[in-house]
Image (cartoon, helix red, strand yellow):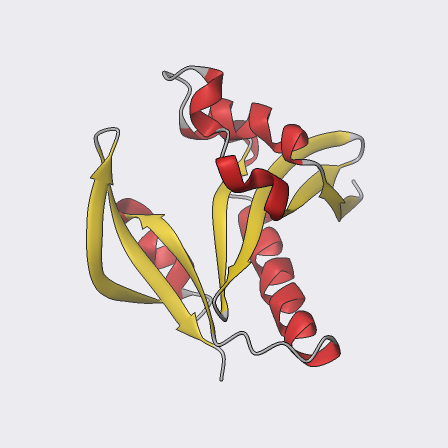
Length: 143
């Protein structure tokens, strides 16, 4: 089946964010104030949206947030496809728009760090907990 990645609206991300990441919280829990300033990507399997991620730029850094893949489709490489696409987008922004983006980072769930390490991301010493889940900030230097 054909898989494609396209830009989507913030609203298009909310259902997957909610059902995958925080199904026990109200839907409003996954809506970010800064969603309107971000660029959002959806991974489509045919006509079905099965993965989402959001990208934000600030102070020479790119941050991706809310990477979510439909539970029944996890473990099939779709999250890797989304993250690889995101890394290419940040590199493209640096080159084509002469941006000075120095790193890409995320708040990784502690039990998902191995996944992000495959993309050259490293754990920092910054950790926190939210909603009963432990996180570590991971970062990849680009320059």
